[in-house]
Image 1: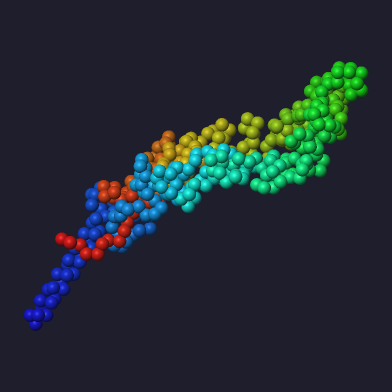
Image 2 (image 1 turned 60 degrees about the vertical axis):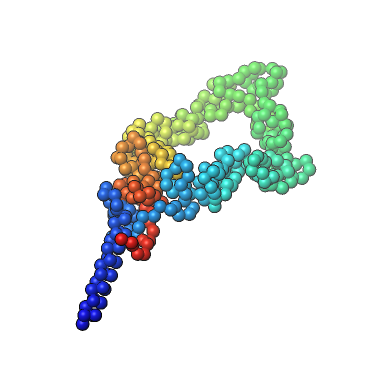
Length: 383
C-alpha cells in the first residue's frame, strides 16, 4: 500500500510539472503585459491554438529581413528590389521594356510592338516589330524582298500603297492624294477648275482635302455644309456642338439633351456636368451632384508585399454618397482620411491582419501575410 501511495504521489508530481510547463509555454506568447494574446495570430486562431503555439522569429521562405525593411517583409520571389537576394535589384527600365521578379529571378517583358530578339537583357527589347522587315510582327519573321513591314505585317493591305516605310490610302490621304507625297493645297493657277467658288475663293470653314484620289475644296473636320450652299456661307454648322446637327447634318438631339463633341448628351441615368456625361451615383468627382468631389487621397501601392504608402486606398462614390475604400492588405487604423489607408496589415506587427492585432514585438515576432509568426512549443521545459 505504501508503494502504491508513493506511485500516486510521483504521478501527481509528473502531471503537475507537465501542467506548469504547458502554461509556461502559453505565457511565452504574451510576456509583454501590453500585448493581447488573442491578437498574436491570424483572425482564425482560437484559444485552443494558443496552448501549443509559441513565438517564432525565423522568417519562413521566401520571406527575409533585408536592410532597411521590416521583419520578414521582403519576398525574394517577387520583390524587384530584392530578387533572389537582398542585394539583387532588377533593372528599373531596360530600353522598350520593363522588368519583374518571378520565382526569384529578374525577367524582362517588352512594351507593345517591341521584342527582345537578341536575348540580351542590357539592351532590353531592341526590335520594333511593327516596322522591322527582318522581324515583322515577331522575331525572325522576314518579309519578302521589296515588301515593307507596316504595323507588324509584311506588305500593305488591300486599298493601300507603300509610300516610303508606311502604307497610305491614295484615294483619301490629303498628304498623298492620288500619288505618294502629293499633298492637297490651294492651286497656284487661279484658272484651275477646282476653284469651284471662283478664282482664289475659299469659303468659311473649308480646306483642301483628298476625295476619290483628287484634291477638292470641302469642309474642315468637325464642320458641315448642311444647307448645301458651300459657296454662299461655307461650312456653316459646327457639328460638335449643334443639337440640330450633332455629329452629322440632320442628326437632332432629344429634348433636354445637349451636343458635345458631336454626341448627344446624356443617355438615361446620366447627367451633363460641364459638357461631360456622368453617373451621379458612382462618380467620385461628381457624387450626388455636379462638382462634388469625394475626399481622400488616391493611388498608391496596392501590393501586400510593399512598404505601406499613405495612399493605399481610394475615394468611393456609392449611391450618390461618398466613402473611402482600402486596397486589399491595407487598413485605415488611425481614422484619419488625410493619410488614407496607412497600415499594411500583411507586414505590420502592431496591426497584423487587422487594426490593433498585435504580435509580440518585444520578442521580435514578425507579421507575415497578416499572421503573427508562430511555431510549435518545444517539448519539455527546464525549471
